[in-house]
Each structure stands twice: as C-alpha cells, then as structure tokens.
Length: 374
Image 1 (cartoon, one colour):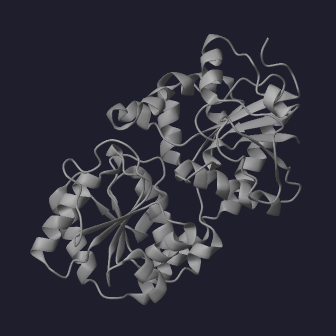
Image 2 (cartoon, one colour; image 1 turned 90 degrees about the vertical axis):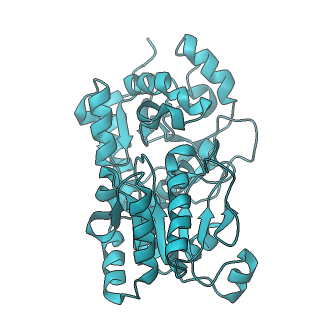
C-alpha cells in the first residue's frame, strides 16, 4: 500500500494535531506489514520533517494558501502532483485535498469551528466550508473520540460505517516520567509545588476561568500553589484582561517533550478548564503519570478520564476555586496514582495506529485505484 500523509502539522512547535501525527506515525513501523509513510507538506517554509523510522519525504511541496484557492474552484490539481502515485492519502488536520486515483482519509479532531466559532481564528473558521467538502471526498473519516463521532453524524449526512474512532494515546515514557530534578527546576524557575495547565493559550481553553479561580483559591488558602501555564502562544485574549504574573502564575510557553513530561509528573494536579474539546489529551497524560486531573465536565473528558479524573462544572469559577483548594490540600495517595496509571495504560499510540492502518487498508480496497475526479 502506497501511503501519503499530510505532515504539515509536524513543522514547528507541535500542537495537539502535531502530537497526534507524531504518535500515530511513530507507532506505525511496529505494526505487522505497515507501509512506509510518504510525508507531504503544504508549505514552502520550514524543513520537511523526517524524524522517525518508516517515513520518507514526498518529492514536491506547495503552499496551502495557493492550493486552497484552486481547490475552492475545482477539485484540481490532485494531491498526486506532489506525491506521485498513491493508494491512500491521509489528511490528519481536517482538510482533505482532491485525490485522483487513490482513496482519501481525513481526521476531524473537533467541531469547535461550528460549536464555538467565536473561539477560533480566521484560518480555522474556514473549516466550516472545507470540512464538509472533505467529508464528501473521503472514503473514511477518522475521529478521536466517540463524542466527536456523534457530533459529525448529527451535523452531516455521513454514512456511519465510514466514521471510525481512533482515540489518541500516550507513549510509554509518560508512565515512567519523574518530577523535575534540581537542575530542571532551576532552569525553568519552578516553585516548590505547582498546579499545571497544558494547552494553547486560546479562548476556548477556559484560561480566564482557571486564572480567576486560582486567584480566589490562593486568597482563600495560602497552601494553594502557583499555577504553571505551558503551551504555545495561541491567539486572542486568553486572560480577559492583563495577563497574570508571578508569584501567582508562571508562564513557560512551549517546552520540549522531556520537560513537559517532568512538569506533569511533578504537578499537584493538571487542570483542563476547556469550554469545548474533541479529546482532552492533557487529561490522559496526567493519568499516565499518576497525577490528579481536574477537567471541565464535558462528555469527552468523562470519555477519556472515566472514574479517575475530577470533573468541575464548565465555567464555574467558584467550583474551580474549591477544586483547586481540595487538590492542594490532598495528601499523596499511592493507590489512586497507580489506578490512574492503570487506566491510561491501554491508551497507546500503537492501538491508535492499528485502527488507522485498518482504516487505510479498507479505504484502499474500496477505491481500487479508480479515478475520483471524474
């Protein structure tokens, strides 16, 4: 099977989609009869990623803005002009380009562009038109949770048999992560104890609620530790006012993977107060480290965290303040930590990659090399 993958999200700092692609592609070579992945980039900037076994670079590349303008008018040019002959093209970031004779597979991570359009930037707002078009083109649609599958099926007339759930995973290094040593604590300027937020600083992540609740919790009980905020800058006003600063909030921005695992492993609790999510990977990563996870009470968070996370009413500042105080005052619980690790242990990238591989094979078999542009 000749497989090509849109690897554009692997350029630059890895956000959630980039980490998803890295996880799936990194696990793929360990599966029986796995194909080599041809990494295709819709950008002229940045080095073409070739960071893992079982991948090679596509022979050509082109800018997404130019291609999107052309694809709005007609399903041309096909992606094979960049990849050469393929059996399957996988678009892991919402938008599936025209595929001439191969089969197209697209991943839809969430429907924030429909559910909360005021929380997305101008580029993501285009998904309102591009995603339905991609769903019509796709032989198969991959979603990362049952919650997103239900939303996709409720929104568009897609054959349910074509929508496949492939949950995100965590790598084995999360289970063995340890809190930061003295050198890392000094390099990052970490306090003795900390609460943690991981994610893009953007409106739907609920940072204003968390920051206000954290301030209230600190006023109520000085034992509540500072909040460490980790992740790319994102966009928009993440704070609803002047950004908070030390000693209450430490903003580290984007950190390397090893540092991130240490930060999660050493946290008093990991906090995800999002208004909306398609999965909620920080919840799973906290559980894999045995760390308490506080998450807004969304169906998808309950799907990911099960009985091992604490759910807080979305947007309820008083409830979040109380949850932060409770987390700060709770002592170590080895049994609970082990239960969290056990719950996360089955959520591997190998499992996700196996679902992807079966989906690609089914799409390729169904297509049979027939032209899809006629």
